[in-house]
Length: 274
Ligand SMILES: Cc1cc2nc3c(=O)[nH]c(=O)nc-3n(C[C@H](O)[C@H](O)[C@H](O)COP(=O)(O)OP(=O)(O)OC[C@H]3O[C@@H](n4cnc5c(N)ncnc54)[C@H](O)[C@@H]3O)c2cc1C
Image (cartoon, rainbow, N blue to C red):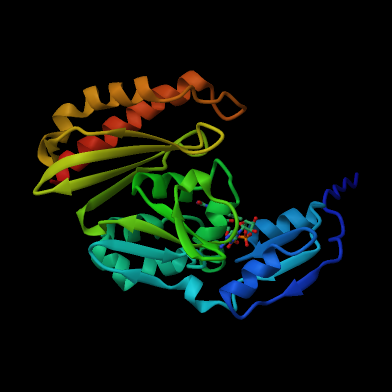
């Protein structure tokens, strides 16, 4: 028996543009008709193959400034066109926020890591991607292009052309993640640590809600005692977590319980490593 499945349609015609400046890219994007910004193309080309039609595809790879990773101890700026591989391998990130290098080197497979960008990961707006919870855990903001230059906005308010993501005080941050229960739930915890004391903790949950959700706490405890506080912090996180979704991957109650388990697990490890 021969069984065939042809779910992909022919891609509708479109014009392909490669702007040389950010201003030109923005003008093209805002031009008449439907536009789409093309980064690595992993999601976008797939959408086009499934019938999503645009009048204009705007390639962003002619704007090398969008791929730059810059900054220092006060802020880390990761260009929207930085690939996952570039983030994992960046000497600057390894220097100012080594946890991000270690964790980002585990995201996706080599083919995706070398083509996929952080901007595309966020703007694909998928609940099962790691970019949104990771950046929420780091208290990052987005930088978008406007007619008057660039502007910083909260991650959940992004629209238009994203130029970068900005992480505040990277050298004061620790980042932990547990992705072992994907695709039901993933957990990213960012901590602001000053003088061995955790002043702020952001517990970002991926895959459990339509978009990533972040619970912020101010435990004000030494990193070394996090293990002892793990159960009570996990309780607080579960209490403050919006109702997770139930779908074919997991029920809401399982997801809520697992957020507690993963929070405890990460905090125990963080305390032991202090
Ligand atoms: C096999 C496989 C495994 C994967 N594993 C993982 C994983 O483990 N973790 C994970 O997080 N992800 C994973 N992914 C997803 C992958 O990370 C994303 O597909 C990739 O990051 C998308 O980036 P892109 O540059 O290709 O985006 P594109 O496909 O080019 O763009 C995606 C969307 O973002 C928009 N966009 C792109 N750049 C900008 C910008 N600068 N400003 C505004 N809008 C923009 C586009 O218009 C489009 O709407 C996986 C994907 C595959 C296929």
